[in-house]
Amino acid sequence: MLGNCQRKKRYLGIKQNVIASTGQSNLSSESSKETKTNQSKETNQSNILIAYFSRYGNTDYQDDIDASTSASVVLDGDKRYGTTEYIANLIRQSIGGELHLIETKDYYSEDFDEVREKNHDEMEENYLPPLKESDLDISKYDMVFIGYPVWATDAPQAVLSFLGEYDLSGKTVIPFCTHDGYGAGNSYETVEKASHAGKCLDGLAVEAEDVPYAQDTVANWLDSIGMAWQNDSAGQVETAIKISIGDKVLDGVIYDTALAQEIKSKFPLTVSMSGYGGREYYGGIEFTPKKVSGGQVIFENGDITYCETNNSMAIFYAQTDHPDLTMEVIPISKVTSDLSVFDTLDSTEDITFTLSE
Image (cartoon, rainbow, N blue to C red; front, side, top):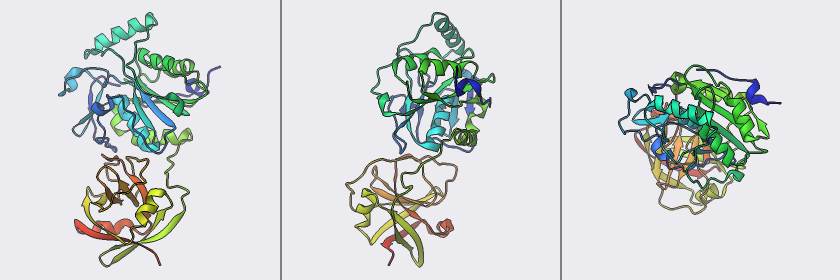
């Protein structure tokens, strides 16, 4: 008896070409070139793995790839992503987790007709292409998203290689796919059978031309299957603070984490902060905290964060159209006053953090 993966399919509509992104989300902080190294990116929800297979990352494309190459690629600013990779990043942006690119030892051809023929041959022969060696420890994860482009109405054989190599029995498995207009095909059933999942949740199928605009679609799907972003600051003991900017004084709270308490010990703390991108004020601090752990590349409005990469603090006040960050940050505090004051500030401001009396 098959579970939810087969019973319910969500169709949105993968044309085999390059799609320019002008939609709601911008993922330019993390390129496919970086993901090709097979390094997983950690965020708060470290028990979640987002594993995906994509032609982009498994094909030796030229750097100036364009629509004439017949590749499934999203152009987002000056960055390029595989369509499935793009959806994987949207999932991570919404709920956290670690990304893992499923990589075959041998590259696929740039010619999609050759890829199609090779995939048909692999399916007919039940051949599982060998994967590159990886240090992925699957035992760390309770929930595994499996992403792929639909080939011949099914999951690519490389996905079956992954499911055969890693033991997902007893885990929650969630499929997602991109396609060229024919939906998920038999892929949900295939993933469920091959993964031996303890539970398989409803999948998501996104047509390639809709990928650059799929942020809300992904968020709604995640909500429908009971997934919601859980910020590490949720449930934290909070201490009231004041944030002074010239003659303006804002209210806030600081969390009871080791890092936040280390920074609080330096109060009153004045940081020269510069505005950036219509979304944040940031500036370096003169000491280097020692109790640093975790990190994320998303933020909530009002977050006050620490960034280990450049030893800085930041106050985020607007999401804008660039919700992903280029460096990981750790929330330590939060502004609870009206954030519209940040729209009235100069480009550089001295911002002082103190405990409330």
